[in-house]
Image (tube, rainbow, N blue to C red; front, top):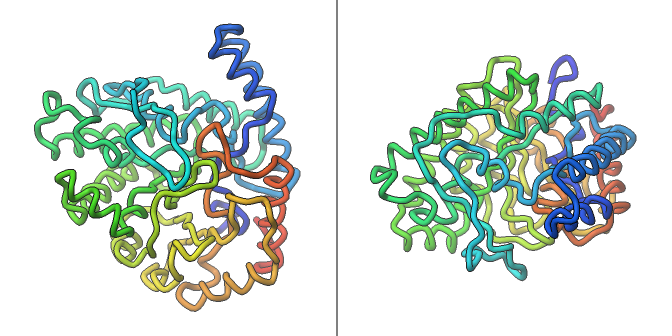
Length: 371
């Protein structure tokens, strides 16, 4: 992490709880009581305030909190040429104790292009309102495939899965380059499904849908590498892995061992935000595969509850991790964002900001600096 480049010793995944004013404006927009411009004005105001709070607690990586999104993934995917979103009768995907809104996406035409995506302007807005490092988060390409398979990718458009994987990878390569051209130098792919594939139940479900889990891992790595190929050397690309984060619930369990060696050595990016806040993510042993020159942002602070962990406990966790990967290769964050969807996790905004300040303070005590 030379010259103050990301990842930072104290970093963040990206999403933040939506403030009441923003939630109210979105509800008014859904009812047709205000227009898109009025909603955007509220979003702008709330994002500027969130940027100021992030800076005030000491973060160096600054996001828009994903305030303009309803979902961490669908909003981006719907902006890809050839993809459309729609309201479904059922969600088709369940968390342990909570149900998503029945929103889905599907391929409506050939992929491979990337146009004037609205999230390019979302990034530019953050960059214009902070002197620190603006960070952008987008879903990994696997988000268009894992949950729904053929329901999302009609055989009439892509009878050959290989062509789908190739075209989607190319669309992401162009997307990464477009964000770079917009000024982005810190881009994160939210790749939850490789973590899901550490769960025997999720692997079985995938097999029952006609996919070989090991073959899928191969294709996901290929698409991620296609995306990374669009990043010039001065762009830091990160990957975030977790096992589900919706209203403080989860989907999957299981340590990283089934994917670790390939995750760290076959994927051509250098920064990994990894969930480690509970035993569901397993131990730190898989970090032994992390090669020199790569960094792991240890998500040992939870974003699912508001209770603050003890600093000594977090320091012990970081020390445990350092038995398998160099301490100089480690950073600190929460295991996920605070609001993967607009509903948000079960804690207050004050608790959220206290968590982020706690990350900054603890990182500074471990490494001598949070930057």
